[in-house]
Amino acid sequence: MIKFDEQKLLAGFQGGIDLRPQIEEIVDEICEQGYDQICYMGVGGTWASSLQAESHIREFSDLPVIVEQAGQYNVMPNKRITKDTVIVISSVSGNTAEMVTAMKTINEIGCRVIGFIDVPGSPLAEASTYCISYPENEQLKFFIVGDRFMKNAGQFPQYDDFYAQMDEYYAKDLVAVQKQADEWAKGYAERHHDDPIHYFVAAGEQWGSTYSYAMCYWEEQHWIRTKSIHAAEFFHGMFEVVDRDTNVTLFMGEDAERPLAERVANFLPKICGRYEIIDSKDYDLPGISPEYRGYLSHLVTHMVTERIDAHIEHINRHPMDIRRYYRQLDY
Image 1 (cartoon, helix red, strand yellow):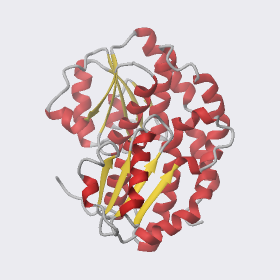
Image 2 (cartoon, rainbow, N blue to C red; image 1 turned 60 degrees about the vertical axis):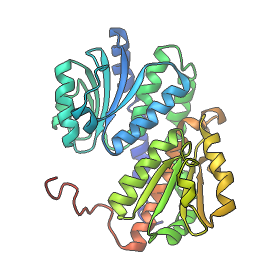
Image 3 (spheres, helix red, strand yellow; image 1 turned 120 degrees about the horizontal axis):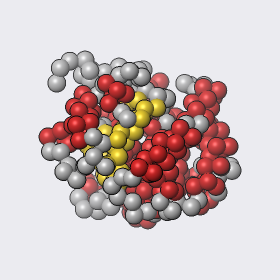
Image 4 (cartoon, rainbow, N blue to C red; image 1 turned 30 degrees about the horizontal axis):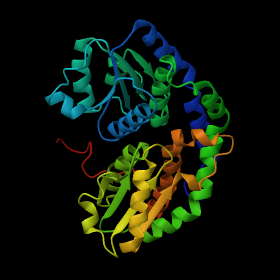
């Protein structure tokens, strides 16, 4: 397998789940102090991860949770954000311009900020009330925060059982998914590595990750044009441009919004000859109870897309870490 270091992957995933005690301590302290709402704030990929966490929390609880896009917040601040609001952020660099500006306002308001910032001492690390520095695993970290808030509110009673399974099986299960997906992902990459445009469709927890996959991976890193569309909106415009030769990929998870994706899955074979379906149900998760699979189905499909990316990068001879414009010039 190209670009596959099993031990590194295992260590990275296990390190992510091992952050749980630190996250629990932070959330428990905030719950003891009290709060009025939870706000996930991001831009680009971190905003997409925020949408995933919000969808998950809304499925299982009535906790007040909102998502703010930092660039929008900077020009039109949400007046519902108060000193009692808990802000959750993430950043690889620790200096994303829109986020740095937003945190200046947030700090002036006096919000408590939970920051998953990879670079200690960076502007966003300094702006965080609580800072944890560990790379990757962004969606997992966001979900642990949400799950702990729900548990403390008495609205996620499965917390202890679910995370006991995650502690033991999460890392090795995700690595196994990558192995299982690799051959299919290679064929997918061969079919679509030079698409003139590709449409990605999803719902629920898959929606945020699909939006991010289209924009942050295919457009930003592969330089392939894409459009992402929520499955609930698919039949209100986009399906009119789908024909035999349209490139469409549908992501299917196992959460409450799966029926929205199933509706699209039932429609595509009638008119499209180049559709693909990436369904988390197709992948084994030994040790994870069936009722919990929906909580991490977006991570399962992410393992599939990681293998697709590795093969597209190889076929196109286009390194994913190069940029034409991002942080290359002023804008």
